[in-house]
Length: 457
Image 1 (tube, one colour):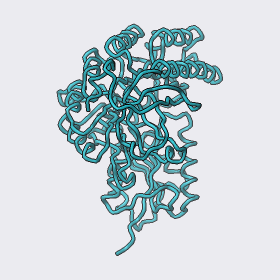
Image 2 (cartoon, one colour):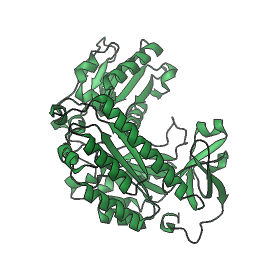
Image 3 (cartoon, helix red, strand yellow):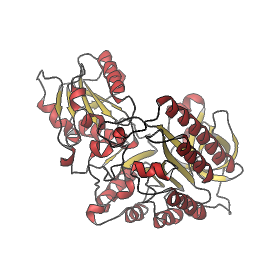
Image 4 (cartoon, helix red, strand yellow):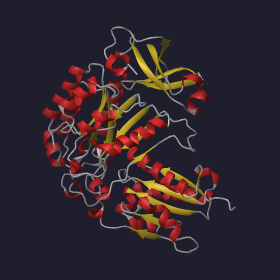
């Protein structure tokens, strides 16, 4: 019997990409490939790319050079958002053998087989993004590569976007909004539960837009997922403010397994800039959503995406964002520096902001974000919260085991292998030099716990 070919994977970008890489890896394993680490001289390298990074082309070339240095004879395939947007450019990079667009990436096995024994290089297979219609569910599960040591997984429940914001290439890279049905999504969640994973993060391009083509909606999905036995925790990776309805917030507040943790992109605290971005909300709606979350879940963690330096962002407009973020009760920020994207509306706008100004503004907001996160952690000192502890070589090497509370506070305790993938009550007592909360294991939940409905399983 011949030795199976080895395949390795490298992923750039978002949680959605990581979920899709796992699906590609399972497909290749089912086809007889052995999954290995990049450093183990695989026969096939698969690079899943992202278009959001400022230097996508440079990053792509750097990783491909690394692949060629590890095994100059290996077959290199490139997929993902950047592969759809710039297929011919990527195909021309020395060492690239195959580039697959959005409609072809999940046919990777068929393309590899079709090219066996052939000396073709730099082959790009892609179609118009408007032709992309099918939805391929994806998730990171416990598999041979992780050896059953996965505590959390990302479950892709939606793909594509119909919003066409002025700064964003995602609709051009991933196509129109689409999803599976609730029944199909629940079936995948049940499969994940059977693998021993305890926490599932729902991810997508526009997650809250789930189900329209099936006459279903996101609220119905999370109601159904909450009934899946074996999953202790669900998190919503990100949801647009206009889709984060009062009904969704109220359900999360009273559900069995959905955590008090919501991440809503803001992008700007200036209504003028939001309008230029073609966002579907204003600051008043955003502030109302935050206030509603705080009313029903005072302890919740609320995350925010924000972009600095979009065209037309004057000092005055930036200060509106600065002030707005300080006026609402949120927990942390993800701050991005605007960079021009070909074929978007924003790239044709006048009033470009100099890059040094953009980066200076990014630094100011990241400083605010650090203070917000610290305040979120300090607010919970002296409380007792449930922590789901994780597997991880990082902990074993440092003598600590790490986990997250229900409301997304990272906790570190002295290492104990038996705590991995279990939920424990921890009295939060201090903050260590790395910014993690520390504390003591306790037996039961305090009677006054503000979120006992999340803690019964």
